[in-house]
Image (tube, rainbow, N blue to C red; front, side, top):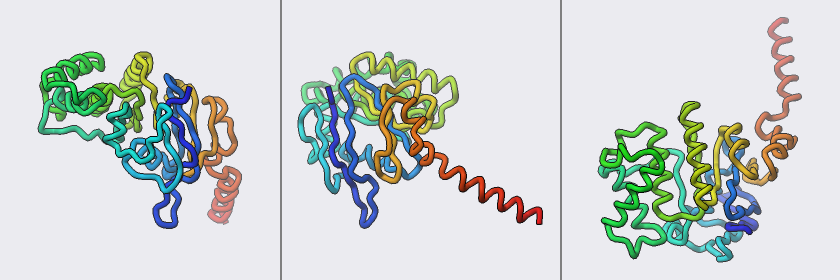
Length: 257
């Protein structure tokens, strides 16, 4: 069953269509990968789906409810949360306070005291492996730690749908493996995930399905194997290889001459 359904989603900035007539769905309990070359429209798509910006046209439904008009904070209240490519902590607060903010702002926040939110935050930090940093500043965290804290804040909101925006950026191989293990555990606890990432091997190993954007349009959708074998996807990532080879040969010939 589709938890999120998107129909004809378009976002124009002046004469530029950053996202153009995109249809997609995210099934409950799955991890959907979203990939594409730089400038494909992935960041704009995430902003549209999480309520950071409004679409020019199209419809977004969550749990059979039209949420197209809802703001980002209203979407958080109904169970949608996101991380950011560049972590955005409250540096003047502790790690546990950062996560407690998520608890107080999420689906059950109106009925939660500061003490309850803090207890929930400590429990989640333990789950994501950050309990030893709970009472420290976010400045004490590595890049990997900050990205885990972003996930912890999402979990604290009691989100049912999480958008992970390049959670592996800047991580080493060991940190990537640990992060993928964490994401699998999050999914195992009943959270549906949209995974936006440039590390293609990680996308292929993690995601049930993959959607590919290029120039604001959806050019492919399917299993990892299906999209990586799609000629349109290969061209979008690698360009016209025959043309590139011809230009390279021409330059070599000119140099020799």
